[in-house]
Image (cartoon, one colour):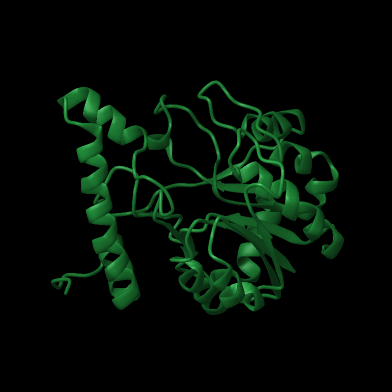
Length: 268
């Protein structure tokens, strides 16, 4: 059994795309879990029956880290639910709201996760230090038993690493337990941006910053190098994002093949 969970924040743009990818590509029994936050009540009503477990968290009703609902809050709230529903040999997957599968999750995938113990997306462009090898929480999967062995706490707390990433506690837990994680590296042949619009391990697509202002570390490095206004770079990114999202909505397979370098035609 696979238990897959996500957090949707401020918008539901990716919900159906992501759920369709679950239905299409997850070839083994699975349960889906979601937390929705900072959206209209009508949005919750629209989607609440699409998951095996659905929860709403809103500002003013719950405790937040730093005043905002953080990814660790989502982990802390949903992981106890997963633990009540899982067996120790089940597989846990955490996926960002703006990420979805583009290839199959099958028995072969499960065998690889059990062999590798912890698999995660790897994106050095996200780091200040491009040589830093760290798992990125946009996508990771691991053995369910680890939630009973201390990983649940480290996923639910902000414990910063040397690059100010919140998941330092996860890295520390893996080090203490001698777990050498398996990276899913970027496999795009066509890159429209150094970090956005990425395919990883030919398994998942991650849009990046799909629910927030599109300024990440590559953009800040670009602004520092060229002297460009970071706000203008952000606006450029948002325009490109809208164009990419339109391609995904209208011709998903064609666009994924384009990013893979397997499509020779003109995109409509």
